[in-house]
Image (tube, rainbow, N blue to C red; front, side, top):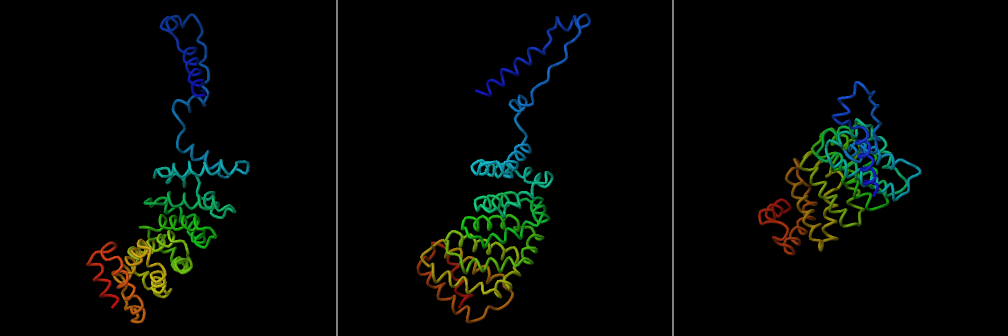
Length: 297
């Protein structure tokens, strides 16, 4: 209804300000009436707001003390949707949006900590310019801190944000290591009770091992293989978790440039055989099973 009203107003403006050929011909005799001002709201109605303007409006609601939680949640959703477009994610730096977004990682409300981490992950995913801006604004440290958050869904979004920030971006990976990120991940593996988050964490570690083979030494010092053994021992009935654990174990053994202690292999080998008997080629092919059997024997 309001859109129809705006269109009607635009039509009236056009009629009032449009000169006919006859009026144009007599323009020398009759002084021309100045054009009326067009309401900016009408321009928005016809042309639509720019995505930069919509991002700014959403962020304004997010940071407004007067906005309700429902309004803020909707604004977060709108903002996250807009930055799925790479150019918009890149514009966050030019529009100085990173600092206010990163502040929300420490919001007292866990829903908004989650939303902030979600935005960080979406903005930096496969986007080197946004990754560099995120790193420059020191976003890694508060996101790593969220891996110890009291809420499972916040910890899950922190893994998502870290993956976006670090993947295929060496400066962020180096900073992640300097901030004891691997230690925090292994601690999460040892303490996490949520199966979905365990799967995400193991998958992320596998990605890091492929990107950074030298991390195998750091993970070994942190007792990562014993953490994997514990997961396999406690959750052998979770097919997806077992598959991700074995794939990550195989990656570790492939990239490690040092021999694994025989006692550690002696713990892992029976679990590999148990998983093979239980799942056979449902989760790994014959080549992968043979490789794991050989390397843990």
